[in-house]
Image 1 (spheres, rainbow, N blue to C red):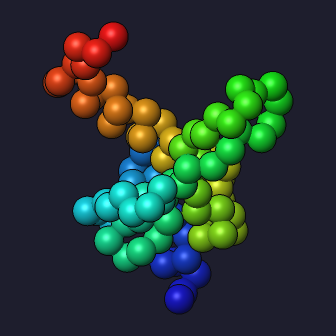
Image 2 (image 1 turned 180 degrees about the horizontal axis):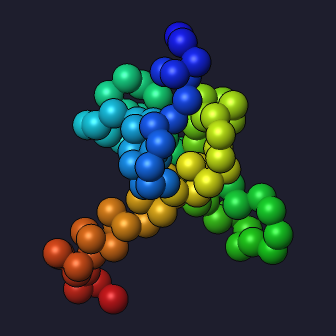
Image 3 (image 1 turned 135 degrees about the vertical axis):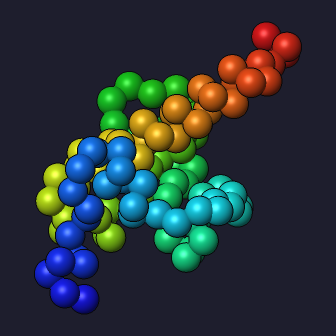
Amino acid sequence: MTEETSQPPYGSKRAAAMAIYTPPFKYQHGYIFDSHQHMVADNGPICDGPSVEGAVASRVRGWGRIGYMPNAAELQDEVGQMMADALNALYQVSPSNAI
C-alpha cells in the first residue's frame, strides 16, 4: 500500500467516511459488515456513563482499520451519522404505526 492509497480520500467528511466501506451491507448475528467483511457496527452494551441495565446499542466499529488515518475520530463519527441518516430516511419512507 502506498502513502497515497493508505490515506482516506480528501474532500468532505461524508465522502471520506463512505470510502471506508463498500456496499452492499449485511446484518449477521448482531454485526453489520460491508461486502469485504469489514465490521461497520455491532450490538454491544452501553458502558460509559449512566445506562439502562441490560440496554444494548449499535456501536460504530472500524477503529482498527481507520485509527491510523488522519481525522480518524471524525471519520468514525461520520459513519455513525450516516447510520442515523439511513434510519431517519427509512422512517420517513415507511413510518411505524406501532407507536
